[in-house]
Amino acid sequence: MRTALVFSAEMAAYDFGAGHPLRPERVTRSVALMRACGLTDGMLEPVRPDVASDDELERVHAPGYIAAVKAASRGGEPAPGYGIGPGDNPAFPGMHEAAALVAGAGVLAMDLVQRTEYRRAFSVAGGLHHALADRAAGFCVYNDVAVAIATAIARDPALRVAYVDIDAHHGDGVQWAFYDEPRVLTVSVHQSGERLFPGTGFTNERGYADGTGSAVNVPLPAGATDACMRLAFDDVVAPAVRRFGPDVLVSQNGADSHWSDPLTMLRGTLGGYRSLVDAIARLAEEVCDGRLVAFGGGGYAWEHVVPRAWTMLAASLTRTALPGRLPERWLETHPVPGIVLPETLTEDVTPSAPDEDRLLTETRRTIDVVRSGPPFA
Ligand SMILES: [Zn+2]
Image (cartoon, rainbow, N blue to C red; front, side, top):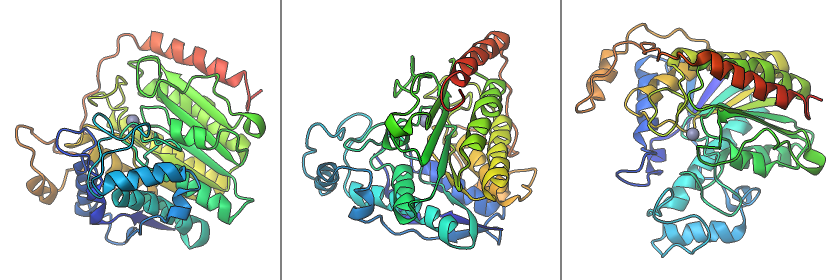
């Protein structure tokens, strides 16, 4: 069973600049750790992406927005109304090419699984799930996931795609791109939008028109633990995907549900993350012959949490055992001033959660609400 790692060093050009939380090191450190762990020596096959074409981008994005990104990319003053500018999505030289390369990696990952002998593909620099049709949002310029799915269903109109998003933030851009599309199921488990960007992803967002029932959301309370996320997966995500019956599973694997993430308020651990990505891979085995296109996503504890999470994901996709200790080679070449890097891949503090009973009760209540509406009822 072949697995592709769709990545090239040029993807580090997706960089909003010093001080921005979406540091390219999140991805470059992760790929270096996968290599140091031996994952790219056979099991995980590196494949270089090309930039997405304008035609591919326009399957999701408005031509006027793409033109605005290109103008800002060339150094022009960003046109107002497109979400580009100081704050979350500052313009930078080459922004269009960098974002189109991330989108192209998604299109290629999807294509490899849809049309070649690769059963799994991993676009580690992707998962930019907040980008909207006509607006940059939440560090996301082009929605690589939505562009990849839209391109795949344009190529094969009978294709059914299930999208599972375990990033701590709601996968709003992907949901809205397919809100009235019955061939694409979007399921997102995230910290509730009551207190977190993007402020959406509530249980009453279910899809629209022909797509009614094709959107599913499990908003978790702030502080939710591994057990809450696992409950949401077992009681909502897996049954929804089984019921939908996809031809391919697409996952967004943001690592920002970790307790140490600086931007979110969930309390996941690396062990919990591993068990979730393993469950997604098993679900793909069960429902669609193992066909799985995995994306990276958020994750702002860039020093060692994100690299270890995405290396675990790569190991899960390839069913490869990881070394117990972090490779010396990686530790020596990736020092972070002022930080002692952990010695093992799984070493993690389990944060105390004296309020876990309350959080589980709240999660169960949310799950009951989700399961009382479409697509479950
Ligand atoms: Zn996120």
